[in-house]
Amino acid sequence: MTGVVLATGDLAPDREHPDECFAATSGLLNGAELVFSQLETSFATHGTRLPQARHAVMAQPACADALARAGFDVISFAGNHCLDWGNEAFFETIQHLRAAGLDVVGVGENIAAARRPVIRRMGDGTRVAFLAYSSILPQAYWAEERRPGCAPLRAHTLYEQVEHDQPGTPARIHTWAHAGDLAAMEADIRQAKQQADVVLVSHHWGIHFVRAVIADYQREVARAAVAAGADAILGHHAHILKGIECIEGRPVFHSLCNFATDLRMTPEHATRPSFREIQKLGENWEPDFESLYNFPPASRLSMIARLVIRGGRILEAGFLPVFIDRDAVPRVVEARDPRFGEVLEYLRAVTAEAGLNGRFEADGDVVRISNAGGAA
Image (cartoon, rainbow, N blue to C red; front, side, top):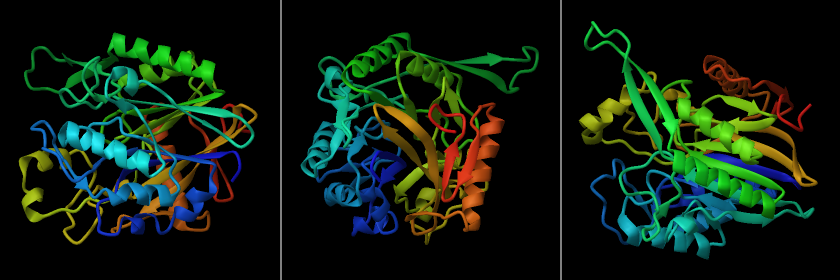
């Protein structure tokens, strides 16, 4: 697939034979010119779990080679799990990814390294830059001048009491981007645009498991990124699909859901207060102790973002519908499969519910974003 760049949802393989995770998709991914994704776990043998880590998985280093064999090229590690097992596992994970031939973006030994883009040249000479940031940040997970971590795009939250005479009633929630982080992202994008033809920006952001809702700061960040020169925005973290919008013809995928994400559940874990609180956020979410994929039913509907890039610009933007069953193996579904329509209709619904302007047209087994810059 010359000129095709694919981007998947979150990655967290955690099984004895990680190649199984990609049994249904490695042919597709290896056929694309570039493949991007977000890593949600550590690939390491040593580390100490940090107390602020909420759900921490240390998967075997062999998973890095499995990602490479599956067809991935560029991996963002900028997220709320990058430092779950401390600096030792953080650097070991990056080392294993790079040893497997993968480029890593959004993290580093200091803030300058974390903000540095990965630039890849496509077959026709088009230069594609990748940048990655995280708004989902346990304390001290973001890089600083003398501290490793990820590139931050922090956000502030204000809870406004609506009915002042009625204690306990729901509050109105306002969020806005950290001014310094936003300015840094804008500068990074402008600089990357001087070095590359196309700039793709990954954001680990948003409200996980809650249907459709897009936080205020996401809209602010997306507009700022496009104004600075971003050609597409790839969203991760929410673990369900969120809507798509186009800003000046540039596609914004607010959440690509999951891809290869193994998540077992034990009765002990299912009764923990920490899980019970998160469980309330997802629709009809019940633990399944025999499943490798313990997420809400909506998390079974996923996608692979598909960008056709030639001549230094995005000619077409769209996605491939994906379904993830209890074995946690993602499978691309064809147009004749009823699940194709299920993914498409869900995405249309949550896009409309969030007030986003994305419009979609099925073209064979591909769904095109009809109001994206180069699309029809």
